[in-house]
Every structure is written in C-alpha cells, then in structure tokens.
Amino acid sequence: MHSLSTKTASGIGAVALVSLSLTISGQQTATSRIVSAANSFLATLDAKQRAIVIYAFNDEEQRKRWSNLPVAMVPRGGISLKEMNANQRAAAMALVASALSPTGFEKVQQIMEGDEVNKNTDTGPPPGNGGPPGRRDRGGPPQFRNGPIFGKDLYYVSILGTPSEKNPWMLQFGGHHLALNITIAGERGILTPTLTGAQPALYTLNGKTVRPLGRESDQALDLLNALDENQRKKAILSYHLADLVLGPGQDGKTIQPEGLKASGMNERQRALLLDVISEWSGIIHESAAAARLAEIKAGLDETWFAWSGPTTAAPGKNITAYYRIQGPKLVIEYAPQRLGGDPAMHVHTMYRDPTNDYGRHLTAE
Image 1 (cartoon, rainbow, N blue to C red):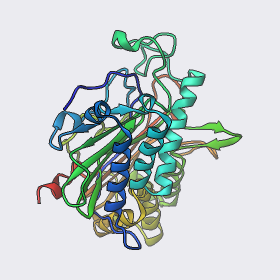
Image 2: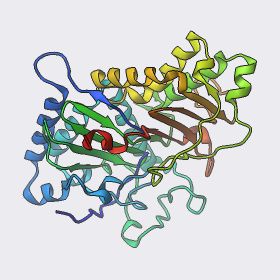
Image 3: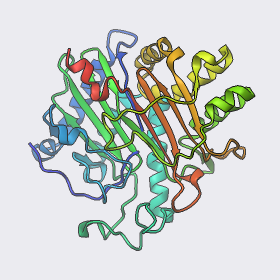
Image 4: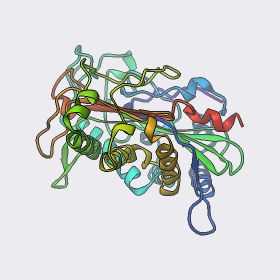
C-alpha cells in the first residue's frame, strides 16, 4: 500500500515510551475517542489519499521514518497538511488532539508555529554548518531545492494498521523538530519514541512570547539549583555533550546511567525531578499520563539526573546545557544545538522507554 510522499516538509524533533491505561471519565474510553477521531479523519480522504496514509502495522521502514531534520533531508511517509483541504486538516489535527493532553497539544502547535516563523524569517542556520539549509540555498535532493522547507503545513500524518479498540495500531505525526509515535493496543497506549524540538525556541506570536520547550528548560534549572554542593558534583558531568545520544536512528542503543541518583535526593528534589519528567510524560492525554507517571515513580530510586554545560540562564531564556534523566523505563534528553547560532534558540529533546519502544512489549503480549 505504499509509495513514500516526496512533498517538502520539516522534521522532528523527542521521546520515549509509556505503559498506560487509556480510560477516561464517562462512558467513552480514550481508545474509543482516538479510534473515532481516526475514522473521522480517514473518512475525509479519497481512496488515493487513504492509500498514502495507511501502512501495514508491521511496516518497520515506516515505523522508523522520523527525524529532527526537515523533510527535504529525511522524507516522511503519509500525507502532509499542505496536501489536505481545510476540512481534512481540521480532522487531522482533531485526531492528534484526541491522543494528547491540552498542554501536550499546545506544545505541538507551538513547535509548528515556530517552524512557520522559520519559514517567514529565515532564522535557520546557513548551509554548510550542520544545520538545515537556508531559504536561499536549499541543498539536499534536487526536488527540494525550490520552495519552502519550513512551515506548519509541512507536517505529516500516517497510520500503521487499522484503527481499532482491540487490535494494535499506530498513529504517527511529525515534521521538523517533531515526531509523535503513538501505539494503541486495546486500552493501553505508548507515546514512544517521541522527539520534540524547537527552532526558534523563543519567538513572539500575536504580541506574546512563546517558548515551546520553556518549562523543560526552567524546571530542570530549578532542580539543579536545588541540589547541594555534593549533589551538584555528582550531577554535573566532567565532559561536554552536544547532541542527543538516543536520537533518530538510535533505536535499541543503550547508555550507561550517570550523574546523581534520585535515591540520593530529598523529597523536594525528587518532586522537582518529577516536574521535569512530567513535561514529556504529560504530552499524552491526562489519564494515560497519570498511569505513566505512576510507573516512573515506581522506579524513581533507580532514576539518574545528569547535567553537562553552563549552570545558569538569563531569566526568560532557555538553558544552553545538555541534561539527561534515565531510569529503568525512561530516558529523557535535552540538547541545545551549538552549530549555526545561539544554542538557547535551537533545542532537540528525546523521550524514550528503552523497554517498550513503539509499544513492542504490549504488542508482543
């Protein structure tokens, strides 16, 4: 059922997985809500579009077709918002919203709006320095050298399998600095691996300052500042980390935990650590997020916090340091990008559950 769409787009961004109960209040479960939204979206498409959107559930190539890079560099599968009419776009975004919390959906919208700023202001780093090419020199395959490579209409929807309240299936949504991989298996769901990023990571929209990943920055710095001298010595690494270790293309890779263990934190510090984690675990809808956070709390004593880079940031600005949170079923990475400009303005993050990428644990049951 598949030829990869070659429309221009942008690409991804952070991160990991979730064992969750999807029941919500009332008679309807989150699974039935998401399935209903998926079927409503598919009903807006013609036969040709549906053939582009739907993949086999076991299509490993499509499952891993996500990145932080623009689609000009890493083509996605599925159908882009640009290829849809207004009714189809509304149904597509309603589907994404059905699987996320209000704050999670707001974060997604802010990342997409940031990419629109990129398109309109050409804030991307110049070509040749490791970042995406600027508007004046596209680079990449010839078919991507003309026209925009940034913008909020360059995000793609794909579905692996058939939307079902019983059988496993998967929703993918992503583009530049965004990749949501949401596996639904009955009443359980997995948001993993998920990449969130931002460039610019601070911009103004309708007179309001927007930082899509601002809380991820501020709350991590609050945690670092809450540590005493001995704890900081353990948490702050002696070497520099510049980018995601478990980013795109790194499925199955393992890393050794390092830094400060949560078992060595006091209750306030542990609460601050959970606040940081919640910025990723809370992207999924609230009941699922609560179940995921309970799972993370169960392994909190074996969860590590590590920091690499500057330990201060100007008020209202993002940190320029890398940090990692790693537990038995959790890896979170926050990685400012230092090539081509201010690292506070270009951030990649990753969220994974190394025991359950793409919901493999649930779908194997």
